[in-house]
Amino acid sequence: MASYDRIDRISQEVHKALDEIIRYDLRDPRIDGTWSIVRCEVTRDLRYCKARISILEADKRKDMMAALDKASGFVRRELGRRVDLRYTPEILFELDTNIEYAAHINELLKETQRHDEAGDD
Image (tube, rainbow, N blue to C red; front, side, top):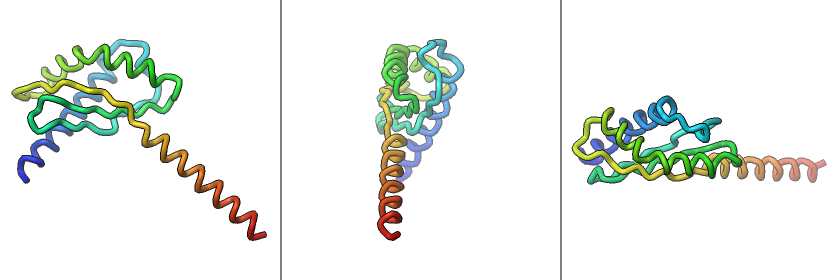
């Protein structure tokens, strides 16, 4: 159980450091707009980290993910400088669409509610 707590703490530290690196250190113009790092999952052997990124503007997703993939070496080097680990994990950026999916489900529920209210009248 203690091993999982350690991995969770490391994941949180990596999450904070990645957010700072992407937000303040990357100078790529494709990385802008409304985005957030939803979750970071570091593997138990500390070799890989899946960083799930949520980007609200649909038209900017492809460009921003390409920019992040291209800058992954720089991000890894900066992460190694900020987080003291034996191995600096390789960063794998993944697009997270859960917020978009939740908004779609919310809209469907509202539409169903309007339909039910119109049927009651």
